[in-house]
Image (cartoon, rainbow, N blue to C red):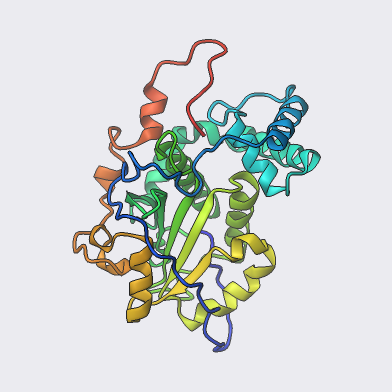
Length: 313
């Protein structure tokens, strides 16, 4: 699972004060919820400025000899994410991207679906999955539930995390938002299901270094006092920009529920997450069905012609 390290700690003050929720745009309930809108959603692709285009060109030139990644084309959007993650410093962005390319080849991120048996073992409880709805800005939603931990395997949890991230990216609508909305549901969180610090640190490392500029918002629901110690221990590893995107909400606090409704349509969110839907989001057989999984569909598709760009990243 990853973000929720196990760490003994005495009672501590409540988690940091959450940021005020913005007034929601028109309700969005489905995966195509932002289709037809005239406004560019948060994280959507926009034309780069002249200076940005120049830096994109310089960055691409520096990476011209790098081995290609099957499912991470070095298109403008990808290069721009790494530039933003390194404050538009071309050399630093190049170093970051080289590290990601090396990691994708060594870890097998582009062929993660080949480890589907392990992923299904880890994911059968629904502890980490791509939701069947989007937030009000049209962003793909990830749901993490540490109480559903079923193996405590470091390798298995990291493989499942990468599969989930790759599936989330593959699920993004062409031309739509390129960032994610993250739900962390802490109901039932305890010392017995909290992952070790090693798993949490690797999760943060992967998210921040190999999927930069992907997190749009993270909502931590019903976090108990026990998590305060773990969060404090993780804070040095969380960059300041990421910290600003984290909000703590309680599903029993009326004002928090109202703020949650500004972020997602509660009608399509299950009750455990502060929504109104009584049917659970996760069903193992349906979730891993080949017709529902864009990674399995991609693996079955014919190989692109020589020189063709892989799908959108």
